[in-house]
Structures are given as C-alpha cells and as structure tokens.
Image (cartoon, rainbow, N blue to C red; front, side, top):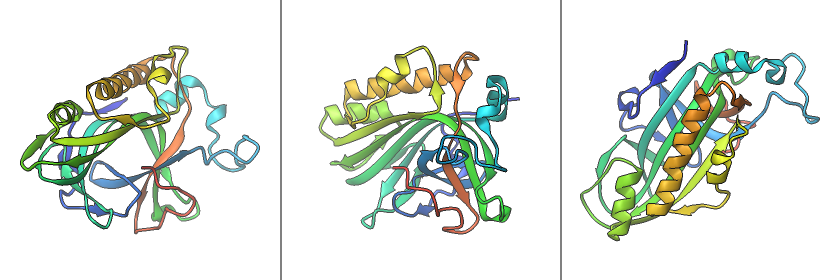
Length: 238
C-alpha cells in the first residue's frame, strides 16, 4: 500500500530545529532527514551492483514501485542564519528582512540502513523525486509567505528577490515534459520561473503514479542517529 502524506505536514518536525550548513532538512514521522546529492551508491565503479548489496537494477518495474512505498509532497520554509545554518519555520510564516529558503518537493522512497555494518548509525532514503529549492532575500517586514505563488507575487512587487533550482532524479519516462522543465542553471523567482517549477512538480507527481514510468532509485537523503554518523561518503544536496 502506498502511504500518501499531505502538503504542509508541519507537525512532524520541531519548529526550532537547526541543521548543518549545506545539508538541507526534510522530515517524516518525527525523524529529521538531510538532503544529500543523489547518488546510486548501490552500484560499483563499472555500473554493476555491489556484491552483497541490494541490486535495484535486477528488480522488476513493479517491484521497485512497490518498494518505494512512502510518498511525500510538501512545502517547507527555512530562515538562513548568518552562519549559513537553516532554521525551520513551517510550511508558511510571516517573514521579515533577511535570507530564507523555500522548498517544495514530491518524493517516493524507502528507508535502508546508511551503514549495513552498523544499523544503529541511521538510515538512507532511497528513491526518486522532483525538488524545487528557492533561495530568497526578503526586503520587507511582515511578509506572509506560504509557497512559490506568494513568493512570485512578492517578487513582482519588489518585496523579495531570489533564484530557484529545479531538479529531478530517477524519474524516467518517454514523456519528455518533465525533462524539458528541469533546468541545469537556476531560474529567476518570478511568475515565469514559478510556473515552470510548479509544472515540473505537477508532472513529476503524475509520473510517479504512472505505472509506465521507469523508476531508478537513488540515495537522496540520510537520517542520522548522531550528527555525522551517516555523512561520510555523501555530498551536501543544496
């Protein structure tokens, strides 16, 4: 059974939590995960499967889809401190002057031990998804921000400025709509950029539910038992 989590699950994360610079946090069921640069760490240097590990390429399309049974679609807002750390504000907040990060994503995944020889060290999230990250500089006080659309309106009124990264991993389809919306370079946080970002998220969500979509799992986040217990071998995912 696929478990669907609604947008804005703010109760799953302590409102004042802070994370190391570079590793962007996400949450589910009370745990606190950190985005990393997606990597297929179950493959060896030649592209084959690591001996003794889980070999996703040997699994059927249906089996992979069934295993990636945890699905999330969320919006999350963070304030960036002077030292670069991110403080969680919720899915929406009244913000003042300063730097913020707005994250919106749709992901499907399963949890695996980040270190099989030490299961207590934490978990790695293996799966697929689409993610939009907006880095924002607010120029005004008491600005209500609850998503990309309100950010675009505020940008049009010169109340904030920003750029967005639109990324996907592991979602492969003959439908080229998603790939046409993914941008290697950041896009401006304006009406056109936000429309592109929201279209990518919508198409990504449809493709995740489409049985004809080929899902190729990547490790994209870690849940550490202690700070640094899973981090060696993973690069920050901004």
